[in-house]
Length: 493
Ligand SMILES: Cc1ncc(COP(=O)(O)O)c(C=O)c1O
Image 1 (cartoon, protein in one colour):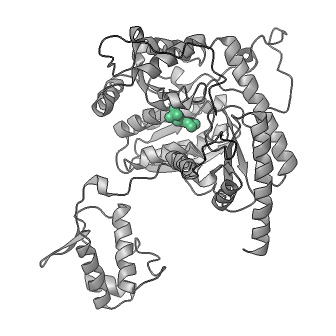
Image 2 (cartoon, rainbow, N blue to C red; image 1 turned 120 degrees about the vertical axis):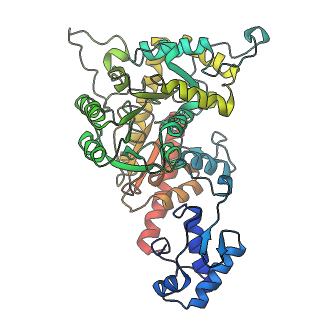
Image 3 (cartoon, rainbow, N blue to C red; image 1 turned 90 degrees about the vertical axis):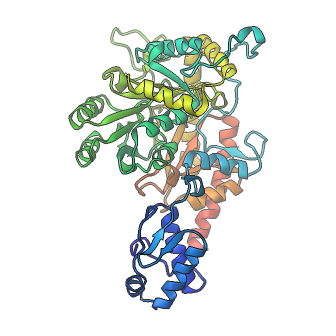
């Protein structure tokens, strides 16, 4: 409790109230559990160097608020409370959505530009399909807990043919996006204190999914070849049966693609340490090459590549090499996030367990979005997929070029895949700049949202899944915001 009360003197108000707030915060953050006995008044008063009377008033205040109870002769105990009375764990991904809502000006209205969510800004890029769902498309009760059979067929084909992950429909569960898939996996596998190892920076929604179950996130470095496999091995050696989260196709914010030897090394670590590997393929299929306007590499037989896949094939997922790997993915990046269609591919009996958990919470996914998703998957042929990646690559190169010209003090990494650029700013934290940028009309994701180990608070994630004109306008505004920010830093305001 003494540790939980570190810094209690900060803030205003009488001392007993500040101590009471410190204890309340510790209870809220679940640093102390229900039925935990608080230290005796005298010993805590001595430790905090306050009078016993001050401590008694602080405990009385907590008792009046219903947070603790005094038990005659036994001491003061934290009262059990229903879980819903605790502040929900903050999910950085949903916090970004709320920030956008709070701005009151949705992106696309010509005013605010939202680069904080790396998903297509609209639906103009979708392959042409019939978007209507008529009564004759709907059959029976429509409740399929694992997902509509047509969609699971289409997803299995998509994974097998395009993502190089041989899959049968009965390995899949359709979810409400990859975030839901990750949440289901976390609910099944993360217990309080279980270690979850991730590259850092990482996908912002991971921390929330793990924190709800009070798992312990451990961040390891990420570089241009993805997560540092040696660091994962060391971290796994210090934990009991950890979970390892890997976004092998594209690291959440940096777009780094996991290198081939690291793939082998990670699979070896997982086998030796009894770890569970969760592979996030939400950005799989969005390979972009290494930029710099280089010509495509010639193929081994000397011909020019016929398609983007020949030029830069997606890496083979880890799940293709080991059936125990749990893979999750999404159609949000390729098609549209509003569809809310994702998937989880898990070995039995885990799949069965996940299925029972999902149907306990929402019975089954909605049918109309699944019908449209199946049509889109069928229509997304090689030409369409090539076009999507070509457009993304051009947007990435444009954004990198604009940043280099207008914001030379920012250090941008070239993403090999995905739809966001990770930039390091010459400041210690980027949250204040993100607030200022929002006032200039651009919403960006600050480094803290993607960072689990405190080392990347100077970063910013910028989506380039926007039109050229929008990216140009965004960089103009960011440049103006940065000039003001730099001025403020220089004058100490
Ligand atoms: C790596 C990663 N995983 C999961 C998700 C969640 O995607 P969905 O919209 O399918 O929930 C995202 C989306 O931003 C992501 O980038």
